[in-house]
Length: 350
Image (cartoon, rainbow, N blue to C red):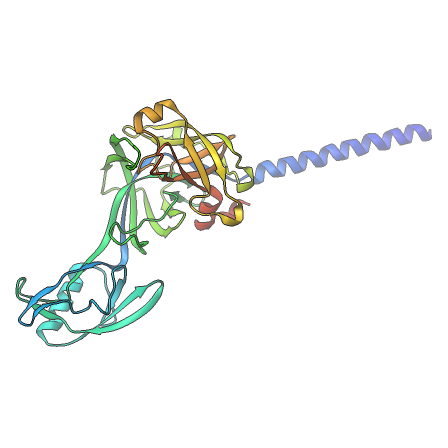
């Protein structure tokens, strides 16, 4: 009798343990984090907050060639206010400067330099060539280009792309987002990479007036913002689990990207090296293109491929970010964990 009871207890214990394992496994499956991997080519249009100074020019005046602000405002500064009024366009700035000059009045300009805010009072001067009062500044507040979508979180309608920040082409300074959009794009030409020349994807914006997403953040790990659910074809909307940094291994992987038209294709790469999690940057992964088809078409990694999702063992683990100029078959990638943290999604996916 005692022997039978002991056997029964063991059987019940086994059943309870099996049930526990089932519940734990089921909870893990239900709690697993999924996002939709990208690979689609996108057009990026961004307007900075304020006006970035990209250069100077001397003005022809009755006192000779002068540059009124060369000693107070530097290339890379972002002008955000003029007489305490927010600046939204270059035309608005030029009109305010010319008006102040006609009235022989000075202007207070507020600007950002290295994340700190400064103010300077300046006096416009009359340019005899342009017949207008000016300050002798070259300004820019827009950026446009081709990149690649990395992921979509349909539940929260958030996207991530590029894997690195958008910089001004003249100053190499990160643009602060005033407003921005992403649109569909088609690739119609590839300029192949070669040593010393990273090459690029060349494409056209499709339905330019019809945006699929709005950019709200421009960070070292990419651009992020809101996106319309199911804005791409359904066969491109299959979600994948997220791989954290500890899941990434040296070895084979694939990338998703477009090399012709708008067709997303998968190509073989090798993860050559991984950086420790505590040193995560947009170059956290070292990768090498091994796919003969992609090498034939592009020579390796090209500009416009930034953001192409990296998938390993069925998990989305990162995105292509940079090309190694001296060997365009190799480049770098950012961990998807870093991108999700920047997007404000990492905690929601844990």
